[in-house]
Amino acid sequence: VLPMGVHGHDHKKCEVLSQHQQNLGHAILRNIRESLSLRRCCSHLDEYTFWKSFPAENGTQRLRPVAVWANDTGLLRMETLDLETITLRVAVVQYRPYIEYNVTDGEIVLGNCVLRDILEFISERLNFKYQLLEAPGEDWGTKIDNEWRGAMGMVVRGEADMIPYLTITPSRYDVIEYSKPIAIVRYGLLIAFPREPPRAFIYLRLYKKEVWILLFFTAVFLSYVLCKLQNCSAAFRKPQFIQKKLHSFSRCLWLIFGILLQQGEIYNITSLAMQYVNVFGETYLPLTSSGRILLATWWLSVLVITTTYSANLIAFLAIPEVRFIVKSLQELADHKTVTLTIKEGCPILEELEVSNNFHCCRKIIR
Image (cartoon, rainbow, N blue to C red; front, side):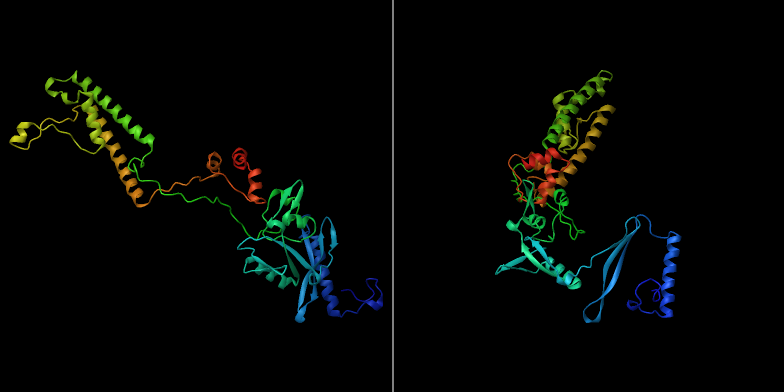
């Protein structure tokens, strides 16, 4: 931007700038000088890329990076990369729906897949060519005896330039350089769909075995407590106020199980009432406050238990129960008959080897 002869070059190789161009150049230099003096930019972490305009097809211009400047390294010139004369070698492996290709007369032709759209989009804008190479053994990259095989081996040996959709693993990350992720893939366990279990003893499967055992022993224990309460209360009451029907453990047990089966109150109907009028005789219900509190608590508990049981029964009959063989890696490791099959070179194998849950993954790999 300086006039002829000022920068010390040969006069024949310089052009005389107009006054307007000189003023514009001085203004640019002045702004740069002020920015540097005020320290508005150029920290030790800043890095600046210089771009230059090059003529392209159809009379258009294309910007390309020519240099990089940083505060600690200074100006570093970049070699201009002419992508128009470069053919990138792409190592591919069948990976539907991202990579799908057919081999015709020794030439790989991409099908209707995501990789074809990506390569066409990038090559059209950067104006470069690409060549597809099939990885041997359809292997992404397996390290055996410190030697890479498959697509990774092609890149390490210089036979290929890039591998699309290559999963990041610690061992691969130390050998090649990755671009920014273009896809995220989640892995899952593929297991056989379980058959519907038989409906024999379906009414007992609604609760676990421990629940049924606990209910039985609870009923027996409450019957014993109720019987003791009645016997202790009889010692302090007059004979006419004693409930003799509940002094027996068997009658208390019958009362507790009757409540559990929602039979309600149990009465002893006299023969005289059956012959003449429908009058109830003496009840089996306790007369003491402690016994009534005990039965009231048991009634409320039975209400919750039976309501839950009815709801589970309706849901069980409407939607059949399905029990998968394994639901997690821990169940897979503890299972005695089910084993895990992993294809060689699959990144999930390396993830299991370096996993924090070492013991579980070691049992699976073994």
